Amino acid sequence: MRPDYASMEDAELVTAAQAGDMRSFEELVARHRDKIFARAYSMSRNEEEAIDLSQEAWVRAWKKLGQFQGDSSFSTWMTRITINLCLDYLRKKKRRIFESIEKMNEESGGVERLMPLVDENPTAGLEKSELRNRIDQALDQLSEAHRSVIVMHEFEEMEYREIAKKMDCSIGTIMSRLFYARKKLATLLTKYKQEEGL
Amino acid sequence: MDIREIDLKIQSYVDGEMPPREMLELENELKASAEGRETMEWLTQIKRVVQENEPIPLLDTPRKLYWEAIERDIQGSLSQPTPAGESKGNVFSSWLSWLAPVSAACLVAAILITVTKSPEALQQSQSGNSIATGMKETDASLDLSTTYLSRIDEAPETSVPSSSISTFEFTSNGMTVVWIEDNE
Image (cartoon, chains in turn green, purple):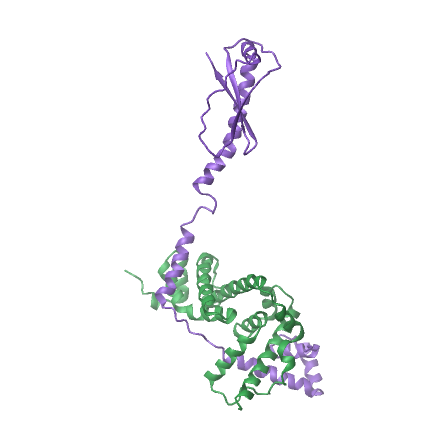
């Protein structure tokens, strides 16, 4: 009799998948694919790349499934694999692209130098969906390095030390990138608010 | 924009990454700094707003289609137990790379044994009666050239039937094969 995969817990599905049950793994993919895609998208900011990266992350997860010990939730483990994959991808991509502007931004603080001070509450009076759109728009304006730090710190709640390890740089660099990224986000949200006369 | 040390301190305070001992120091410092309190205010705001409003893009790809691509890649990786570069052609090449020199070494050993036992063969080779054997070219990629052994310096100890000796130089891999054929 075919197991009722939909009623099984993640942990049960993982155990079955570790034993080679591909249908269990398919159920895990169905449950978590939206989150994994969202994370890949938040890092790459490109829908097609995000689909490819998220699918590659699932393939990598299948191969590494034997290493999953259940220390964290399957979702967290899977998200870490996706982030690692995205960081690798962005590093390779960065080598191919001349990023002097990004470097300049990182060193000098970039556009926020030219902008007015941030509003103390740049998001007051906005609906949640509108706020999300604006944050999405602002994230698009960040450099890959700044965005990656925001994604890992704010969305994945990773500590400075863990982010530094993943990005292969010092904790000081992560702190400075995070500060710039936040400043830029706040400035952009203030700007959007001013443009719309709110 | 330059980041001041105090900005990073305030940030680590907001993120809960500051050691408790330093937290008290910073709180005292901020009492006297309006600018510092302002930084604390907007950092706290932006952190909360971003964390609570993460944009969630929708994945439009149908579930079945999305899964099939993953399954195909998994199956593909499972059906490739042989690492890349181990094709049949390469297996032949690796076989040739060790078997050919071994064969050559055997032939050289054989010729030394034969020649040291054959004064007649020595005489025949010295008088130019040796005949290159008709080794057929089976691999067009090999560049074969035939030369005759013209001289063997050491006199043989015993008499053996006459034989012809040929060498084949494989210029493509710098290998020489010596071929001996019994003419009787």
